[in-house]
Image (cartoon, rainbow, N blue to C red; front, side, top):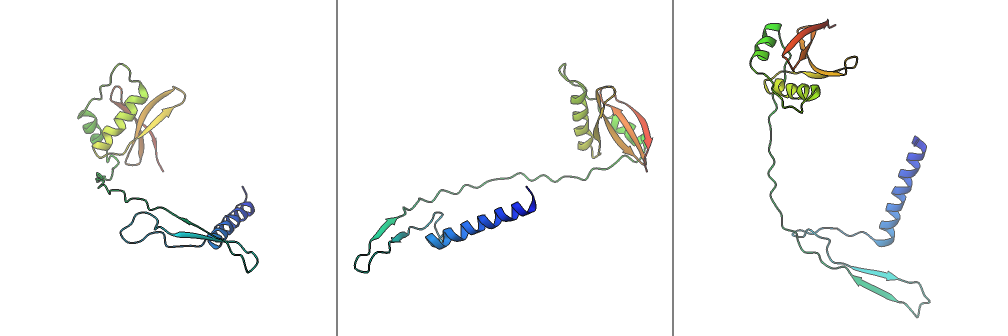
Length: 163
């Protein structure tokens, strides 16, 4: 939809809102202590000759107040993730755990779970899809270098220099 049609649609919608308020009137929707629209009388007048005026009234019913419920939300403080400073630091982290999956896990399961483990240890990593091998692994940044990690056997290798 181009801008002219969108502007025309917005103007039409605004016009309909104004017409509705003009036609049916506007009342304050809420009063203190109520969670529902206040009862009001709707009056419709029909223009007839001066000797005959018909007035039709209808009362809107009151809706009971719904009980309020307290909602408890858990707030998690997220620690900023960091890149590895050197290969020794990566080796230390890699040596601190071994990811053991079950018999239904394949490369993408290992890669996603390994990414979570690195994040829990405070390190940033990403999941990489190697199209030529149809395989998923992880990658990390060490200094100014990109390294790949194979989470299924805890091996890693340098891919390229960055910048």
